[in-house]
Image (tube, rainbow, N blue to C red; front, side, top):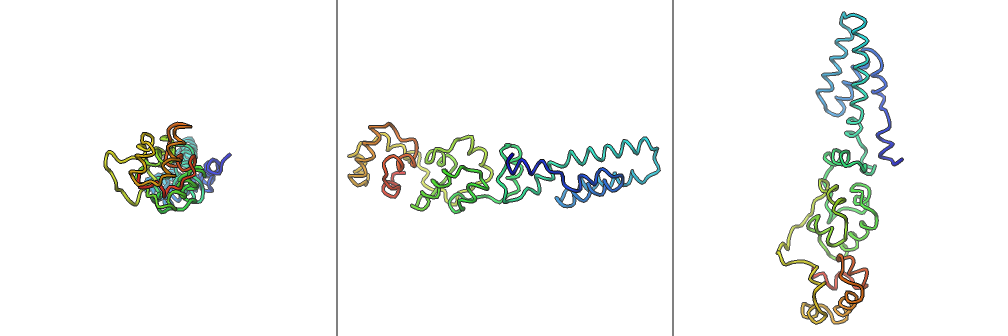
Length: 233
C-alpha cells in the first residue's frame, strides 16, 4: 500500500469522537472549523442541539446513528483538505485534482527535481531529462512540448495540467518545431548552423534507426549535446 493510500485509510480522532452522543456533534464542528467548512460547523452544532433537546429516546438513537454516519462520510474530504505536502499525490485522478487545486503551481522551468517527482508524481527518468535540458538552456513553454520533447504521455500530462505553469511563453510560430530534423538532410542541417559532424551524426542515426521521437531521443541516440542543435528546436 502506498503512502497516499495509507493516508486515506486512517481515521482522525474527531471521527471516533463522533461515536459519542452530544460530543460527536462538537467533533464534526471542530473538523469543519479546522478546514474552514462552515456548513460542517453548522451540522455539528445541529447534532449537539438536537441531542440535548427533550426528544423521544428512539429519535435520539436515530440522531446518534446519523451523527456517526455523517462523520465517516466526511472523513475522506477532511483528509483530502489536510493532505501533507511531503506525500506524493495519489494516483486516483479525482483525488489528485482536488488536492492539486489547493497547491501552489509548479513552474516547470525553475522547480526542483524533488517537485517534479514528489509533487507532480513524474517518474525520475523524466525529472532527470527535464533537469538535463534546462541545464543546457532549454526553456519549456507548454504541456505539448513536454510530450514532443521528452515523450511524456498525454495521460500523465492531462493529470498534472492543473499543477504546472511555464515561466516563459515564446516562439509560437506555426512552422517552429524540432520535428523538421526528421526530414532534413545533413547539408540542410549544416545550412541552418549545425556543425558538420553534428549534422552528419544526426542524419546517419536517423537513417539507420528511423525518425526521432523527441528532442531527448535525439540527444540520447546521437550523443550530441542539446546545446549543439537547440536553435533548431
